[in-house]
Length: 202
Image (cartoon, rainbow, N blue to C red):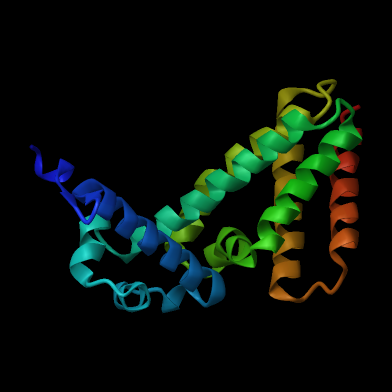
């Protein structure tokens, strides 16, 4: 029997490795989402996860690989939430805009750690800054697909990129505590931004 398939206390080696990886990712989210990126080190992660560094390096080559994995998980979750919200909404522009904004607001405010990882950590961590730039087009593409197609592709691309940047700054200010408005007012304003961008191409 392969070593990975052997069981101990009812779990296989692969199961235990997967559980440790999940614990390390959850710990990375907690540290990155509640403190500064500088506070996330291999030693700090291992201490909080109560694992030895051996198990850390079983899953990640270094601290940056863990941080990128945490960030990518949040990005993937945000992208899926937005796609799902639009697909399950009504057909009108307002319905789609409201569904998308509410889904994103729920993701980053119901668990503010995810919002900070997605929007605030890339500001201070060079590794995440580069990854954030790489991931921007996937969100701009979602916006572009919802814009009226009477304008040419270049105009729609510029509008989508500008809107994603504007929304990211609004949400970042809210998460940082420098924008003191209610959740509902934040949501309503962002919906108006989305509809206003769409009106440029209608």
